[in-house]
Length: 205
Image 1 (cartoon, rainbow, N blue to C red):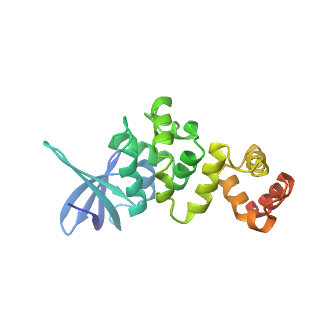
Image 2 (cartoon, one colour):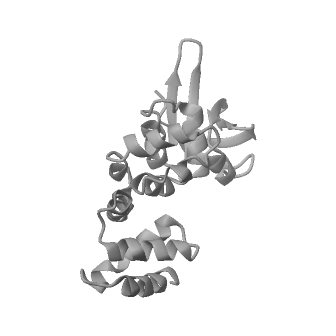
C-alpha cells in the first residue's frame, strides 16, 4: 500500500492532481482545501496517501499531513460518509474546526460541507464525540473544554464567556480556546465578566 508520495506536480483536475514521481504519474484525489494549498505545476510537493483498493480500481487520496489523513479515515466510520463526503468535509473544515464542531455538538458547522445533510451531520458529531479528542493533537485540552461546553457540564461562567465571545463574532473554537487559555490565570471562581475580559485580551494578541 502507498503511504506517501513525493514528486513534481504535473497537472490539476477538479478534485485531483497528477503527481510525477520519477517519471510515473499518479492521480491523487484531494480536498479542495488541499488542492488550493499545493504548489504550482512543475514544483515539488509531498502528500500523505490513503490507498483504496476496489475490485475495479485503485484510488489514491492525498493529504498535507498524516493528521488530516487520520481524520479522513475516522470520518468514514460513520454511516453515510464515504470517501467523497469525507473529502468534502475536510475541504470545508480544518481538522481543528472539525474537532471543535464535534466537541461542541455543532451539527450546523459540519453540515456546511457539500453533500452533508442534517442527519449525517448529527451522526458525525454524535458517533465521533468520544473519538475526536484522540485526534486533536495539541488541541486536546481545548477540545476537552469544548466537549464540556457542548454537553452543558462546563461551569456556567465558562459557558457564558464562550457564548459572549461568540456573539462578538469569534468562532466557537476561537472563543473556547481563548477561555481555556486564561482559565488557570483567572482561577476556578472567576466570573464570566473576568473570563470575557481576559479572553478578549488573549484573542487580541
